[in-house]
Image (cartoon, rainbow, N blue to C red; front, side):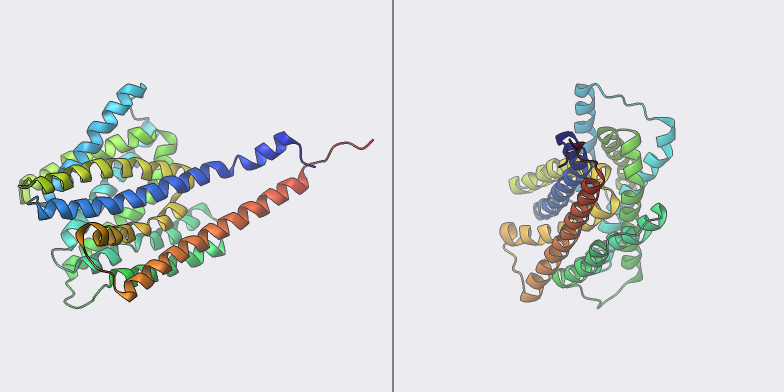
Length: 319
């Protein structure tokens, strides 16, 4: 029989991963809700510049207050500065690439190209870590991507290379965030990384807005509701994402983020009165099935590891 303290020790390593999975689910859900509120803000007269600038400003201000309240230092360790700067640029690439891609190609196609980033993460991270992912996790990525293709109903008609390039930039930026950020949050602080992502992008996005389009605020009460909703949900989503990357790692978090567009689709159905086709419902089912496949694989792997630890633990001495 395994001693109680050995049982606790065997269970502890899985706890951060489980917590990270919860954070990843929260982040994906909140990002999806943010998309719906952004659409409400646009319908109320806001332009993309206003939505993007306000959401980064909300992140920066909220995290600054939280860090002050918790007594956290704003000083970034020297060994983290380059990595943190690259994470900030990755977020900027996602924000600008995704928004500007839809000026040239359909939204569904832009989203499909952008959500190739979990596949990039699944290919790159094992190579960097010199490890091989679990078969269930490896199989879950293409299944989830196929489900996204059905759910988004992407059309390749009217293809414009500029839109593809912008969406590809967003995908590479998303993959880069997931690959680089885990070490940044491990070496520094989740709140600090989130703050500097918001602060740097307030400046970068502000410069882009000054050059290109300016800021147009909503002209209706509902539009302001959408804009405020974007600020609130995007802030919590950012913090949850970096917490997930610290606890669960890049590969698992990236897979869970396939839920984000599904939440946006379902939110549009509930709040905007849009309808789902049978193909889209099938795509939603495929993505959920892929996540269940990956979770099942994780559960079996954890059970096997626990059994191995238990068998290696010496029993009590005989009489």
